[in-house]
Image (cartoon, rainbow, N blue to C red):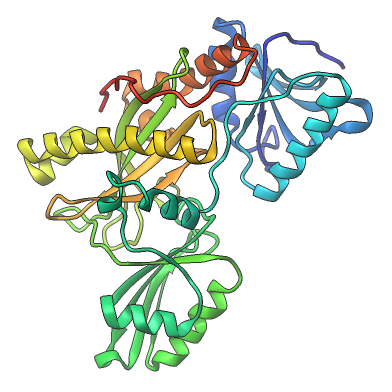
Amino acid sequence: MSLVMPGMLGVLVSRKQDAIPPITEADYCRRLSLLGRRSGISVMAFTAEGVSPEDQSIQGYVYRAGVWTFGRFPLPDIVYNRCLHVHESLNVKRTLEDMAERKSRKLIYWSRNLPGKWQVYRALHTVDKVRPFVPPTAPYRDTPQLVEWLQRHSELFMKPQSGTHGKGTLYLRLTDGGQGLYVQGRNSQNRPFRRLFSELDAGLSWIDGIAHKRAYIVQPYLKLTSQSNHPFDVRALMQKDGNGCWRLTGFAVREGRKGTLTSNLHGGGEAHPAEPYLREQFGVDSTRRIIEQMMELSLTITGALERRYGRLGELGIDYGIDQSGNIWLLEVNSRPGRASFFQTRQPKSAFRSVNRPLEYARYLMTHSKATGPKGAGASLEHTV
């Protein structure tokens, strides 16, 4: 079946074999489809396997009348990359660009994606207004580096440069007067684990075996827990609107289980509205200061990264707040989730989180030339 749809947004996702349809983020794509219909944008979800350069078409899924329908489609007007795998999405990008060139069509990507965590940390460390909030960070090299950092900081945090959902994160602490090593973390299946090594070298060797399978970064461990010892962070969702300007869609707190390492929702965490949660932890005046700082930082970060890497469409910016009320920049994600706003029952933020990508897609469709970075003077809509 061949379907022709003007004003089409193609969402590149990863394959999820046991799901129906067999794609990641089906619920998000369903929401995009329902809202897109109101503004005349058709949404098609597809995976790398669905791209057919030989017949210049794409096999994908559309959501209609309450069900997913599989079909064959022409090149979409805009590609929104939500694929989890970097190499896969790069291969698809090259193939789609070749298909567009053959048809003398311009292929518009909804946004660029950011590189790994280390490159982003390094870029933001050059920004004067952001540098004080960036924790000391370095790419993992070898065990002597860990020994040096452990002697300097006593507790370390390690995470994969391209990891998501808290998978592969590690906490390290010296024990027995520096003779042993305690390790806590989450494995590749996101299951928590703890290990105690009586000999430091054995522990470091075990860490090295993990860290050399994929690129890691090293940071001092920051105690970012609530008064009840739950790890938490604050997600700021920044998105472009229908005028191509940056807006703050909202803040949400993600709180992990007591005694665990991370606050990711995929690791069993819960989401809470940000302002009431922060008031309980820090009081009214400090919460006002924290929120104002995060708003200013978020706008500075989006502008800095867009100038560095090119046009972006949305960013999930994660902040940690220590028990003294100091803000730390934890991570910036160019493919952010938005489950926090649905879990916390923040209807305005939840609606905007899905609708703004459609607004921005319409903006791109009606501007034939690629637009430059916008947002330097944009106002922020404060929704917590």
